[in-house]
Length: 106
Image (cartoon, rainbow, N blue to C red; front, side, top):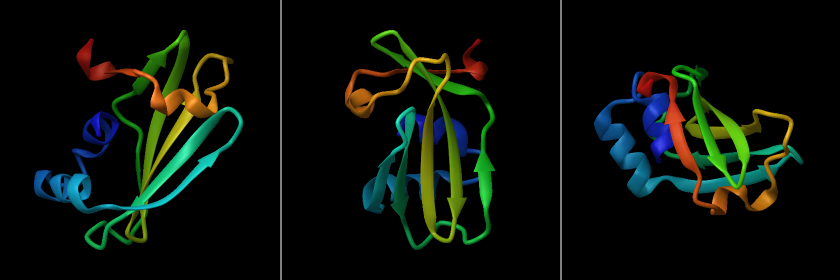
């Protein structure tokens, strides 16, 4: 939720973010070998494509740094978590205590 808040708050209202947190339906989790795509759906999400990549948002857990991008399209929201330092984001990464930070916090 912290990644969604940091990246999507400029394009989604607070009330819609709250609805997504409470009501979104799981769609998929696709592991790529160096990261993952996690997708949820909600009928109030926009149909038009929106890419949320600012501010820079990254996470760190167990010595692995990751970056995040959000894609919104056709009523779905996808979080991409990718390797930010040539250390693969392993399958269990999202279950760890990932410390999230952003360029806005500097």
